[in-house]
Length: 119
Image 1 (cartoon, rainbow, N blue to C red):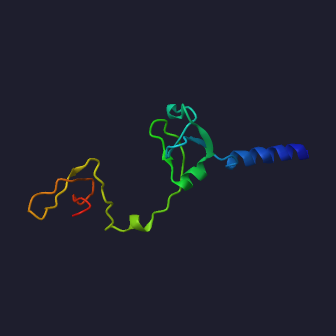
Image 2 (image 1 turned 120 degrees about the horizontal axis):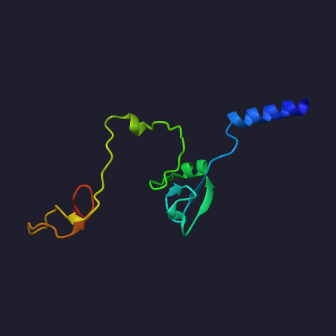
Image 3 (image 1 turned 90 degrees about the vertical axis):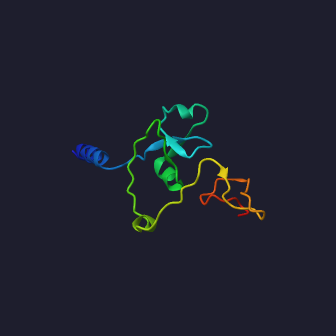
């Protein structure tokens, strides 16, 4: 009788609790986590727990799309309406600054304000 009660209790506990943590895979150099079947894991693959990877700041791969659920709290910056992220330029452009002679600077910059390190 006690064996049956123990078995029922064990089955009930295993069905309604998160006993095992989710395992994901990361590469040696990347900042994404993957499923075991992802083709990005062809040359390097390391097995880790999902919780530890999320704490470090890794994000999910957009190719294999590993499923996970995370309760996220809104940070103070997200709560403020005046917060606007600074957009970085992807390609270099010519500096908008002027030299002493009045000509436009010839240096290239990726800065969001459009000026090189001297201007």
